[in-house]
Image (cartoon, rainbow, N blue to C red; front, side, top):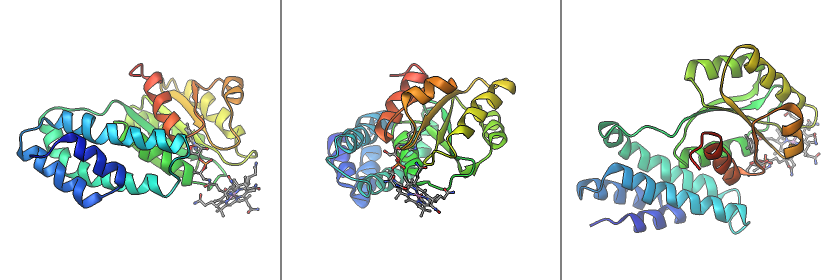
Length: 210
Ligand code: B12
């Protein structure tokens, strides 16, 4: 009999095979897909997020846990669809125009997926128009932008303005090493977080699911 606590522990260890096997076993045992997702996988990723925030674990360990989570989601997805479980909301995520840094963005994407969001990653060097188009197409609740260069940060303002001009209601969330809360306030972005775990908390707050 698989229990969700062991699933959570295997995820935290990044043991992909065990996570997949325990997910399969839990489904066979009749554990509801929502319980497997929330109490096994998402709670495990939340712990990863907390440890990452506290510097107890480092950058390489997050993708390892995320890979294990992706493996389990592959097994869980058909059962979730059958049970009518929807993601919390859709987040369009990209690195801003002129900027090619994507390590932090990818971590943010992994943690958001682990936190129950559908993430549409539009890549690097993303123009304001591409953010707008993706948010419209995906009916995104949140438009999340990453910038690692002081020279590319100003393009975030353009995205905030372009979304408004296009009548897109997605909330804007920004981050990256040179970005601060005061910069978010200055450009009228709805949210800022300093790291990937904080991005999940902020995204939940923005859709009022904290
Ligand atoms: C790796 C790296 C590169 C790699 C990028 C590879 C890749 N695939 O990403 C390469 C070699 C390509 C590169 C190129 C350049 N780089 Co560079 N790079 C770095 C470096 C060393 C690490 C960045 C990183 O990945 N950090 C690890 C991740 C996990 O941290 P993070 O990105 O900050 O992300 C976290 C948070 O910020 C937050 N976050 C990030 N995004 C988002 C988004 C949202 C919505 C939220 C809520 C949160 C959030 O969560 C993340 C996880 O906790 C930094 C130095 C540094 N210590 O930051 C320089 C650095 C960013 N680079 C710099 C520079 C100058 C350049 C170049 C211009 C160099 C050159 N002369 O060619 C080019 C620019 C290329 C371009 N157009 O983008 C400078 C920027 C200076 C500045 N203030 O503008 C830095 C600070 C180095 C320095 N000290 O001079 N770089």
